[in-house]
Image (cartoon, rainbow, N blue to C red; front, top):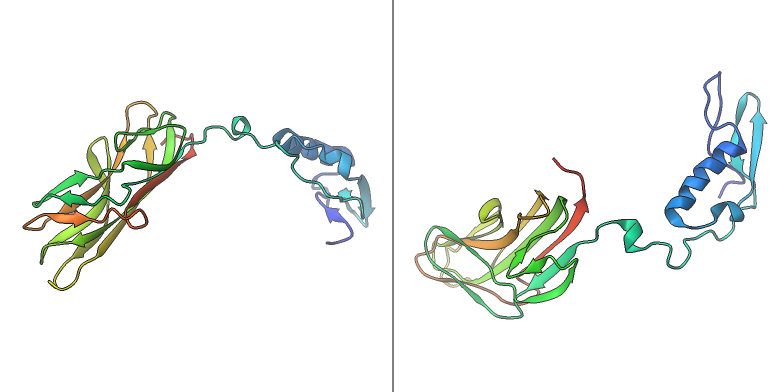
Length: 223
């Protein structure tokens, strides 16, 4: 680490942070966010070096500043919503024909915020959410296709990669899909689904590591 950490300057009349008081204001803002008495752990000083003026942390004054235990709390972070689900090793049949079918997810790895129920994610905070799902199909009719999709309010909004079985001796096709999507925090809900075009039933693997659905809250901003 350098002897001095320059955090502001004034040069050719352009004003930056000129005094230790200015830097104290910045550190005070950091304290509000972290609940850590940072000013108690550093020494501030002014400097003037041939026309360049500013505020800096005095050499040797940086100690072991860190977030105090318990300083970061859910209340300070805001809304925390996240889920991870699977079907606990139970396979699922996907009916034949050009249609999509919502998948079953009986088991939660976790459901922070309590927004997962009845195979649906229904966030109760308005904002943007990141959702990702994956499925593995262990039985696909020859010539048949299976695709993972994410549906919002019963309508597919994103499809994943398409996999077609052209070899009767090959089984095991995976498809992933990811979406960054707005939810109104009241009625909007999301499902992971599978689309099949086979002439007979396809089977989605229930292995907990191969077929799953996850998601989390990103930001309260709205489109």
